[in-house]
Length: 324
Image (cartoon, rainbow, N blue to C red; front, side):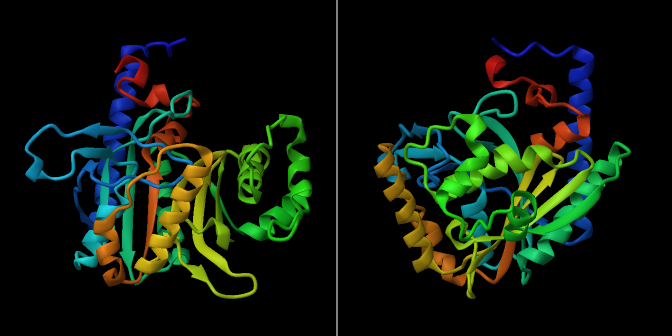
C-alpha cells in the first residue's frame, strides 16, 4: 500500500527543516575551512559491496564519449578520494545517491548523503567532529543528548556476554533464535551484523548518541586495518537512538589492498549468483597518492527523521518513491 500523502502543511515543514539543516551543514564546514565540491552522479564503475545494489543505465551517445554502461552512485566516495589524491584537501559533498531494492518505511531508493574527508585525521578524531555536527543539528529543534563511546568488542561483551571475535557461530545465533532467520549462506560477519541490527541497536536510548569504533578486521570495508592481536578495522558507526546515521573510516590508501577487496566483493557476488560490478579503475590508479585521512558518510533523511520525531522516511521527503 502506498504511503499516505502528507498534509501540505507538514510537507512544507519538512522542506523547511531540510533547508535549515543544509544551511547549518554548509555553515559548519565553512567555519572549519572544509571545501564543498560536486562530483559525478553517473560513473563507469559501480559499488562492488555485495550487500548494496546499484542502479545501472545506458549511454546512447557517441562511442568516443566513454563507457556506455553507467552506474548511479551509491555514494560520492570514489570521486571524492580522487580529488583528495589530486591535493584538494579537506572537502565534503552534500547530494543525492541511489540504491536499488531499498524501499520501505525507513528506506527510499533515492536519498541524500553528506560525505566529508579530513586530511591528517584518524577515525577517532573524526568521531568527535561527527558528534559535533549531529549535536548542532539537534540544537536546531531544541534537543540535547548524551554521548556514549564504545569499543565494538566491549559492547558485545557488556551487552550480550559474547566475544564477537572468538565466540562460535552457534553462540552468535542463539540470541537471534526468536527471529527465525534463515541461516542459509550466512557467515560469521552476517550473524554479527544481525546481532547489532536485531538485538543491540533497537535498545539504544532515544536521547543518546552511540558511537561504536574499532571493528573486526573482517569488517574493514574501505578502512585501514590496525596491526595487533587481534588486528582491528579503524572504522566507526554513529547511532542516534536506534537509527544508524553515519559510517566512518580511517581511510585505506593502498591500491593493491583495495583491488583485492574489490575482487573479494565480486567473488561473493558470483557465489550469490548476482552480477559482478566493474571496479573503479580511476580510483585505483591514484589511491596510493591519497593522503592519510579519515572520511565519513551521513544519511540526511535518517537525521531529518530524528529531528522531526518521525519513524517514516516519507515524512521528510517532498515525494516518496511511490509518488515520484
